[in-house]
Image (tube, rainbow, N blue to C red; front, side, top):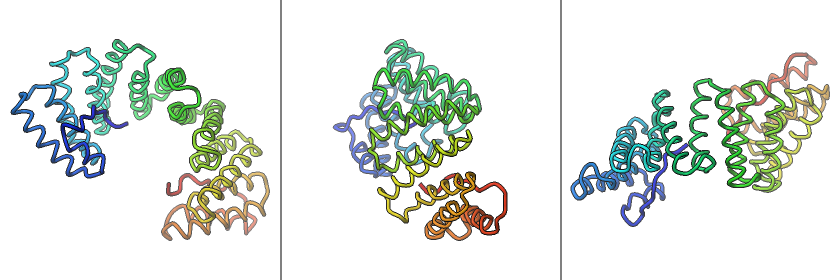
Amino acid sequence: MNPQTSPQPEKNPGLAMMAAGDLAGARDAFEQALILDEDIFGPESKEVAADARYLGNVLCRMGDFAGARPYFERALRITQTVFGLDSPETAVDAGNFGVVLQQLQDFPAARQHFELALKNDEAALGADHPQVAIDLSRIASLLRQINLVKEARDLYERVLTIDEAAFGPDSLDVIEDLNHLSQVYLELGDLPAARRCLERIAAVSTQQFGINHPQTAVFLNRLGGVQQAQGDLVSAEKSYRQALEIDRAALGESHQSLARDWNNLGVVLEKKKDRPGAEEAYRKALKIMEAVLPPDHPYLAGARKNLARLEKGEGGAPQPHKRILS
């Protein structure tokens, strides 16, 4: 998740530069604003805190999290002094600082700041406010990163409840929440729960993006993978074929995403003992991979192994497609 800012486009041209993608120019403009505001308002003013926040944000977008750290830390310190430790303003800067600390893998400190933001936002906004859901999702992401997956699941479930009430059951926010939950359930080995999430995502994605949108195909492929892991090969084949038809309609016959679709379909057809169908699917996947991937790419080796095994009539497990270029 990205740090939060409070745009003031009339004050600083750096915001327009950042919006236009000129990150180096935005950084320089924010640095100049910081120097000016230190002279005008003083080094511990809320204006300087805003400048530091902008600088931290643009450095994060440039991938310089170590460089962003002192700016977010300064913004937080000033905000705590100006607005108070328990204020919503402090929650914003605590959350921003937590994002940077997580990127720098200082997980205990990141969690401490995320929890401060959550405490302040719950007190100021109420336990069911969408900002609270953002705070909870940040903590859940961190917990998942440090392998506290059950704790992350519980928080993501609460996030889903908040966002359903705030945005509706078919919103983009809910798709994101269900996506996180499906991944957590898979990590916990709860295939039925993961399948329920992905089935719902596929349905909502169709409403949000349209019946032939590639994003829907991504979710259908993941649903097919769970169905296949459950041994429901009929449903898995249906999901993979739906994904394939969506990508063919949206992207054309030679797009790299179809390599994933054909390969996944080949795997399930092979498991169903449909060797001619599996061989055809593997050949089409391999043809696309050879066109879009370097010759030494490991996915090519897996695709060739699948096809060679079928041609020789050998047994063994097919090589599933993990991820092609997105």
